[in-house]
Amino acid sequence: MSLDLKQMSRPEKVRLMEQIWQDLSVDEQDVHSPAWHREVLAERVAKVEEGRGKFLTLNELEARLNANGQ
Image (cartoon, rainbow, N blue to C red; front, side, top):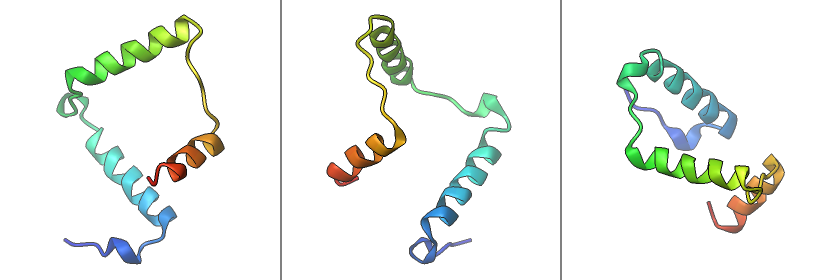
């Protein structure tokens, strides 16, 4: 099966990703996070607990991603 992603709108792509993730996450045992994920999350939790964590609104995040060309 092949999809022409260039022809899909952004909302259609997001819905498709949500459907794929929902299907993949049905059996949690098949979804494994690499060890570095735990390390990154631990660092971020520590920043929040120390009062150094910075939270962004969705608008701020989108602006940051757009500024970085992502």
